[in-house]
Image (cartoon, rainbow, N blue to C red; front, side, top):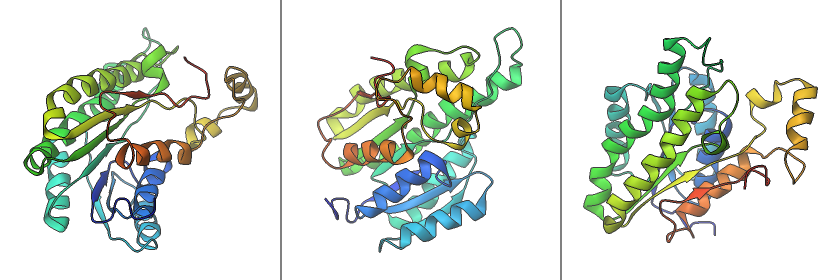
Length: 248
């Protein structure tokens, strides 16, 4: 499978750490040149780029807050200027601002919707013209189990992630005739900084709800993303539910 993505170009938003970083590195392992997008942590982005280039491919680091339409467009333009095209877009940028509906501020609602949901549209809107022209593209939207089942104190996050799934289905129908696939990856609880910072009691309670008895890893998610870019050409409009059986 090594080399399956030789010559392809992938843009991964929020790629400096966590799931985004794992996705960027996994795509690089299989031959893709990778654009590492970050918002504020340049050192982490540069570190990810160095690890990507260790696999014999090229990396481009681009600072952009993709919750802003003009910056998302600039990210895609910089990628196309450097590499001439974008074959793969992984819409991974996301934040959470957990609060009950009664206590949630407008800013907490807006920031999650803009970063998690609007950024997906902005980046897709910017990249899809080139994909259509070349009659090829892979768009992968990083949703969540929370977008499928909801969760206490996460109405903003759940709404954004559910919106990503609905967008995925509609865009998949629009773009299939151009050989552009659009899929949603919906991880369950994964060993990210946010999850691992929870108390031992909370983590134990979460694991008790997962039939496989463990949290997922960023590498589990990255392998699914890579699959959609290599063997997964007949998947479009799909929800890839990698959650250890927590939600079926």
